[in-house]
Image 1 (cartoon, rainbow, N blue to C red):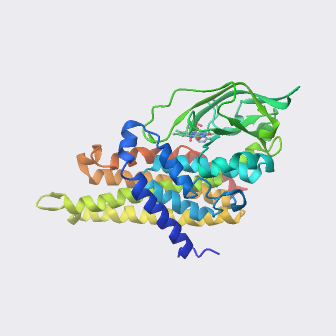
Image 2 (image 1 turned 45 degrees about the horizontal axis):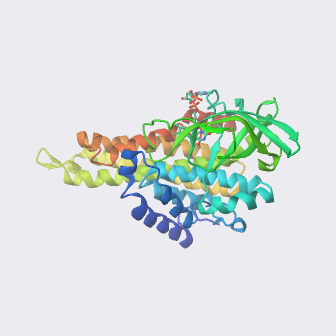
Image 3 (image 1 turned 135 degrees about the vertical axis):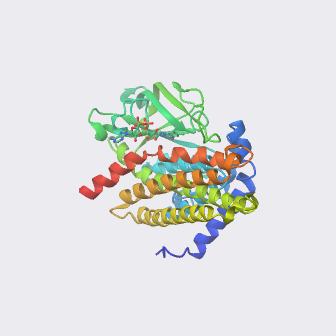
Length: 384
Ligand SMILES: Cc1cc2nc3c(=O)[nH]c(=O)nc-3n(C[C@H](O)[C@H](O)[C@H](O)COP(=O)(O)OP(=O)(O)OC[C@H]3O[C@@H](n4cnc5c(N)ncnc54)[C@H](O)[C@@H]3O)c2cc1C
């Protein structure tokens, strides 16, 4: 049983490993990746070697079988160097976990070995051009067909904003197999090289430049029935279950980014002098740092609690994951903005890392459910 106020020896060891990996493999290069829009595939593979591609995939299937608090610690540590890279690895974990948790024995045996090591990379495809927050309104169709080569689905439609799009190998895709809302949605794993799969241009984004994002198009793609995860009509349930953990991870990425911004700000205000003294000596600076640290610790405490609830399958886990994601992503944006203000004009320059974190953290309030959608989930659960 996790004592929420003290991390266990094992949790501290995992945190330490993730921090070392970040300091060596991510932090020194993150600004260059951002500038050059470089996707660090070699770093993803190195993360896979540490088990970070399958953090909560079962040990039986080769994963490291940890809980969501351990996962949060890893993503928090990695986002201290680069939130986009950490979040990319989170999405891969979400796709792998859906296959491990709900896929057939055959599908798991076929796909998971590559995903676990990150030799193969996984995407999560829910959003469409016409359905973002209203995800259950998705229109991509999968029509069951049969011919001499066996039963298969014929998939048509477009997925929007897909992390890992065009780079990744497997697309865990929510498709419509029946015309009855969320209950008509099924989950298929579609492979990159299947005929009829194509990709839009890489999106030009405000941040997350080390993470690929593009449209994924399906034009009469023939997908074997064996690639269906679970039964017909179960896809939306899997997609939402994946998001409980995904939201913990995205919130953790905000914590890591905000911690970095706070640490950078503390260092800077001691060095920078105005009016004959270090700006750290102004009470406004001290009060602002105090607010930043308090908001960060409050978000961290809620996020760790929510992570433990998701691991335990607590009845209120979805509400807690939504509350934690909302608080961490909103506080994270405010903290990094305050840090930028403390740097004055220099905070606006690429010479310092603050503006990159400011850009990277902004999207955490939008993806895997916007802050408004988080409020809807929380409100609905309170009033049920
Ligand atoms: C960089 C990036 C990576 C992404 N990666 C993935 C991915 O890998 N896989 C994937 O499936 N998706 C991904 N997404 C999509 C992301 O999850 C969606 O952008 C998000 O869910 C919001 O959908 P939308 O953009 O269509 O906005 P909309 O749903 O159109 O919302 C627009 C605005 O209206 C508000 N709004 C909508 N409905 C309500 C309501 N009922 N009440 C109050 N306000 C409301 C929203 O909060 C928002 O402010 C990614 C997005 C980005 C930007």
